[in-house]
Image 1 (cartoon, one colour):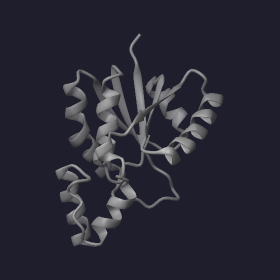
Image 2 (cartoon, helix red, strand yellow; image 1 turned 90 degrees about the vertical axis):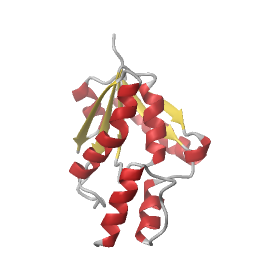
Image 3 (cartoon, one colour; image 1 turned 135 degrees about the vertical axis):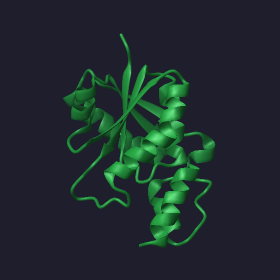
Image 4 (cartoon, one colour; image 1 turned 60 degrees about the vertical axis):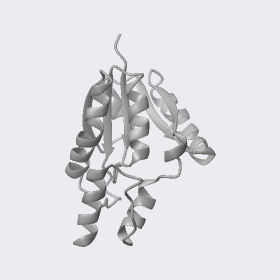
Length: 166
């Protein structure tokens, strides 16, 4: 039986922290699906199409290099519904610290109640990427700061261009 894993997030923008989780997830799944949550109440910096392209460009090669199949999708409903649509049995979640753990445990518990056949897998962030959040990256980039240590080069260029033309 092949293991299909779904890693969901807003990925606005994709960060080196996301890449760290993706790299780890590609080592435990036969297929990794990155799922961009699209919610009407949130106004992202980048469109869903731009985020899909960034994920494909930054994550696709590293996943395929590990011999893992790769796909990117968007979803606007429950993550468990998106997981069911792609046949996922694993839900990947990255953890940076204890605050993440508490919140993610609540989500995992609720998801387990609604989808008992979907297992949540927590992957700890590597030390070098633990402080990175997409929110902080957006804030730093928006104020003209150097975000090159926090995102892949292609994403840094897109952020620079985005804030050069507000």
